[in-house]
Length: 280
Image (cartoon, rainbow, N blue to C red; front, side, top):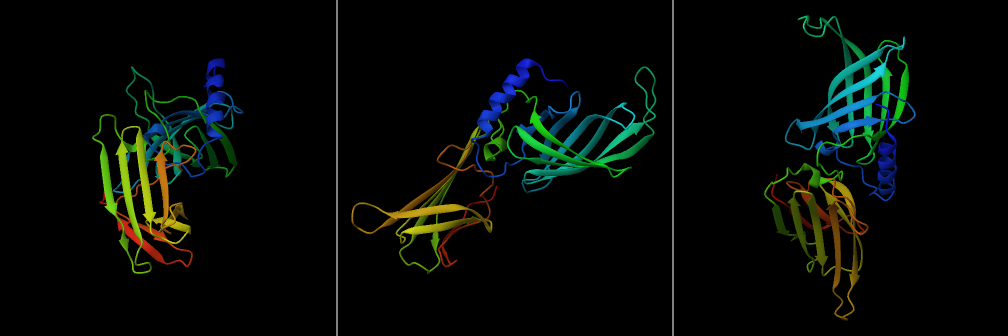
């Protein structure tokens, strides 16, 4: 798996984009599928296939093949399947013994545990892999770069990666409900999901100037800055927009806002506005 000069040039160009990426952890999606390697360790690496969802949530199964060497320097292919947890996937890799290539019909008669490994994805093109060998307990680490990408897939690390090409676009709009903390508060949430693009826009108004936290599904996701407009009517307005792919003005939409509470919380920790978009 030694990279060519052209491959290295491509990777360096990708890294320039990564440095400007969003601070949010990426969402592991099928767009992460491909070959990955650490330039410091030649002629070895990983193939990852991000498969279907394992349940109703965002978690997906990931099939991994590790091309490496045993303690004697003999080549090893180790295989395993794990489940994503945010931007992390942890799994046990096994190797086989006793088989044969065609035309012999000899099935592998032994599967042996080889290593426990944890992948942590920082972006669409960088990840780390930390492993512990089962037999010896020895540990190691790779700083991985993407070597190949599948077909015409586009990786943003966000919600848009979840949409199949040709899928019908989805647009959901919900007016936010006042909780009684501020009798004048108003808000609206709009969610757009289509191939190669997704957006969550949260608009609030008639609030006092200041910062308001945005919680989605009980997790803090960002801040709405409410300012009073120049018309002199004292009406405070603010907007927070998440996008996938992200841009300079909008953080990455790396979560699914459907089917969970979206809350606007004031400086005292009180929920001022709330709504729930229809579930996926």
